[in-house]
Image (spheres, rainbow, N blue to C red):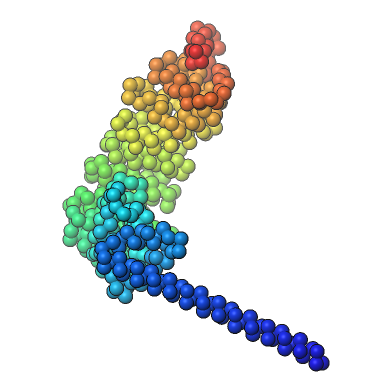
Length: 434
């Protein structure tokens, strides 16, 4: 019995000892973290006072001793405790090559903090628009809009205040209309949908453009008629609006509604087709974005509509051509690449001096990987004999670099009795290796 009791006592002693050590470790970790955060706070306050706050924020974000989340959390606490105005501080952020910080990395710290800041709406609107403007044409230029949406959606008063500010100062704040509508719709979808619909009839074209765009960005609840209301509004706008930019936004919103409710396919395709008949640059750009980035979700009827209109792409619109290239690569990868080849040759022949094959670099890379498609294209284009098409084949071969290419004739493109053209084709094919 004695030995057994001793063993039990020993075990209990070990357990208590372990608990004490564990609590001590936890206390030490908490103390260390508190010291660290206190040091961080002191450094930020000193930097704010000395006028190099943004530089220190950037340096802290790079430090292996700080995490971006810890830094953002501390900025939230300092702002909400009224030790400094984080929103005003970040409004001084500049996107300059000689700045002592990286603009986008520093901006990302505010984006992490914004949701939790206790701030009036107007200063946040000013700051967000400043950062978007400073970002310029970079792909990340609109990134602050996401945190702004989250900021507004945390309190019902915020999107209402933002909307009031926008309508009171359109020239200054119109750019924030879509984020405001999206944020408000998270709180009350029907109310902010009706606000967006109301604003599609506004006298100011900038408001109408963004209201139209907003209709495609709202997350519509299932089992309601709200998506139908939005589509009806787009159809009405499509009958009276002629602005190229607005109609481009209409195309994007119409397709977003299609993804939400595919039963409206016919109405939406008709709506997009009518907008494309205006033949503006921006509507073509919107069509090219659908073709390039939403290719896998396009119904066949809409794909045919887009291909029909995209043939008139202008050589100077590099962005539209790039998006066409992305979509065309996917189109020629289909089991039957005929539609893709026909579209490509139509664009090249329509612009023999201005749109060379080399512009479609994604397509060229795909052709270099897929001999079956390349053989079909080579046979078809050499038989046609158009200079721009023959040069296109040469461009593909040149881009193969040191890759060994075994090119063959595609018999499906030949007319068996047309011996003259077969000889002509053989000479053309041999020429590309000479």
